[in-house]
Image (cartoon, rainbow, N blue to C red):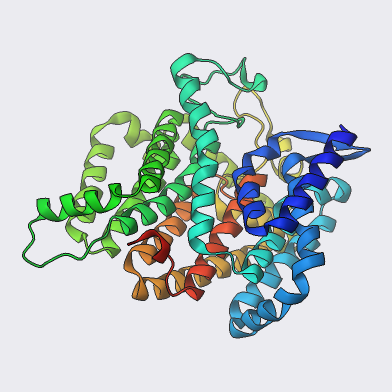
Length: 440
């Protein structure tokens, strides 16, 4: 394995040297590769981390000196974001030592904080185009979606660790839980929809009927094969999310659609969708119980949140510093643990409590600050490009809504995905013609 890792590392270094943009693209496509785990000596690592190490090494040697003035300039232009970014990072560092097992927390800190935040710095410094980032993310969904659909159709290709689990027809793709499918795919679906909507856009006359306008949009979209491919990738991603039966993902994606429709000017459609959702939630007992947290999953989350708040308010130290990275189960849930009543969960399944317990109160506040500033930039982008800006706002809404009941950050691929999305927002703000190369 050591020889294979070294050969792969050198090949990725060579690719990064010859074509850094393509290497970034392959790295993004390989985000699910964090599941390929092995040791180099006594150091546990993943294929994704080896890829990142090669990418970062080439950037440091070849591009960092050139990019650093750009990074500093942008940091000075956006002092509030810089403040939240640095506070978020420092909070994560402190949380390594809040943990009673800092040597184990260090590995997750590297994967969830150090590497994703360095990737963000590289993407901003290199000024990777937002169109490229969105396409790379869309391509990364293909393997995840295809495996999920094959699982549903054949009942095969499930991870070995789940063979004895009761999935009740839910798909997991490469992951260990069905919810991970929606957590990864849903934000990317919203970004893909921005490109689809933008590429199909044509100049419309005020005299055009709705049917004629829709036909013109469809023809504008289908005139390029790449658009058809993106449409197909988006469709199978939505199909995979549906087969995961992740209610949090469905609601989050629905909220994203509503927000995007609203800001694009389709307010009646947004209102009808919201009202329809409310009626369906009230009419169907299974959905109503899920929305009201009356089913088992909802009750489990209420239990986790209650235990989390009990821990956080038990002492000033816990309130300000949390549990430390990778310590939630041991410090919060273990005293209550009963495998018959609740499975072993390592996060509270709520973004606010996830950040608060893992990296403390200041980590939570800095995460909120990063989200607020990202919203601010997305609204600025909407004033210039309604479709792209609306989609970026919707992406953030998807992450936040899903994060109310799940863990959309604390996983190798999801932490990388989050900072790639923030980089996409930044690069979209810098770029005046995000989709110019897609249009004739």
